[in-house]
Length: 367
View 1: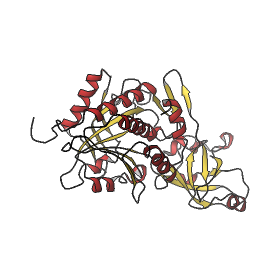
View 2 (view 1 turned 60 degrees about the horizontal axis):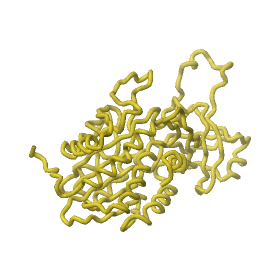
View 3 (view 1 turned 120 degrees about the vertical axis):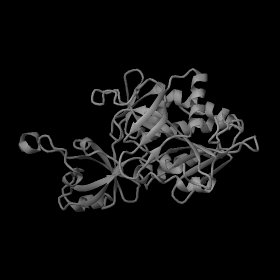
View 4 (view 1 turned 135 degrees about the vertical axis):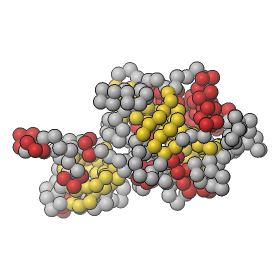
C-alpha cells in the first residue's frame, strides 16, 4: 500500500454512488485477489475476501466497510440544457448551491463537469435570503444551451452525479475530500488484507467491501446470511463534534484517536441502531490500551450504519462491534479527517485480527 495520503487521494476519486459501485467493486477485487485465499462477488456487488485461519475451532470474524457514496441522479433534462435532479442517500441540500459536480454518462464511461446554480445575490428576494431550497428548486449547469447538446454528451435522465473530486491536505495532520465516508474504512480493509497475507490469522477472517449502505443500509445483509460469522466488526466514520457549530455535542474530536462505539441510533422511525456486544467491545478497548493508542467512546443519536441490521442475521445472531474514524462535515465535498486517527485505526484492526482466536469468549449471560 502507498502512503495514507496517496491511497485516499486515489480511492476518493473513484465514483461509486449507491447501487452503481462497479468501479469500486472492480478496484477491491483487484486489491484483494493477490492477497486472499478466495475472493467472491455476490449479485449486489459485495466483495468478500477470505483468509483461512490456522485454528480449526476458532470463531469466524467478518470485518466490513462500505464502498459506496452519496450522490444525485438526473431526473429531467430541460430544453435549455439545465439538469434537474434528486438525491441518492443523505446529501444535505444546504451544501449544494455553488458546488462543482461531475455528471456521469448513462453508460458510466465518462463525465461532464457542472455546478449547481445559485440565486444571483443582487436579485435574491428578501424572503429567499435565508432559505435552503429543496432539490426540486435546484438545477445543474453544465455549460450547454439545449437538451440536444446534453444528450450528445451521453447524459440522460438517470445519469448519476457526484461531487467533483478535490483532495487536499490541510495543515500538518488533516485531509479534506469528498467520500472520506467511507473510503477511510476501505483503506483500513486494504491495509488489513496486506497484513493478513503476511500474518496468517488464527481465526478465519472475512474482509467485505460492501455496497448500498448510503441508500438503504442493508446491502451487506446477504453476505452475513451466506457466511454466518460468529462475530463482526464494522469500519466507518463518525461525526466529529469539535467545530464551533456542534460545540462538542458529543465527545468526538479529530486527533484523539479512533472511536469505539457504545451506542448509535438513527433517532426516528424504525431505522434502529447498534448497541455492540459488550465482550467484543471490551476486547477492542483492551487492544487499544495494550497498544498505547488513544481512543474515544462513541455515543451518538442521528447516525446509523448497516450494522444496525446485520447483528440479528443468521440462526443465532452475530456478536457485533463498530470502530469509527472521526470526520467533520459529513456528506459534503469537504469531509475532513486527521491522519493520526487513520494511522491508529490501521494499527488497531491489524492487532484485532492477530489477537482474535478461540480464547475469546463472546457468550452472553456470563461475566
